[in-house]
Length: 173
Image (cartoon, rainbow, N blue to C red):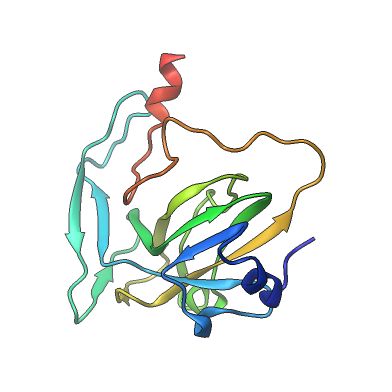
């Protein structure tokens, strides 16, 4: 089952943490998260799964920034979230999608116990000007049935900012 917006508000400070929280971002069954001012782009065109890939950091200026087509941009939410006893899910906002901006390619599924900022894998279908602070995506919460283990990761848990791929750590196992 998916939590209603009212239930999200009821669980704030308990099984759901959203910081900062703004009541105007609550929806009937989700909460809008906003884009931070930082973007990362990979330095090389060809990426390697087995090694850390270098990135450049870009600050979105007040007048916005135009995303090019065919290029991956890593952004993050301004909001830090924690989730207990629920499965957090992330989806792009339909208004953003209707402008041809995909905000997550395959990483919309969160894990029970996740703590951190959400890294966004953004790709534009056509050039689009983006702005820091815009409602870029929405988080919603599923209940979980049965016994579970909380998410513990040496890669992404308790992150401080945008997280480039750390898939290379899987090769060390």
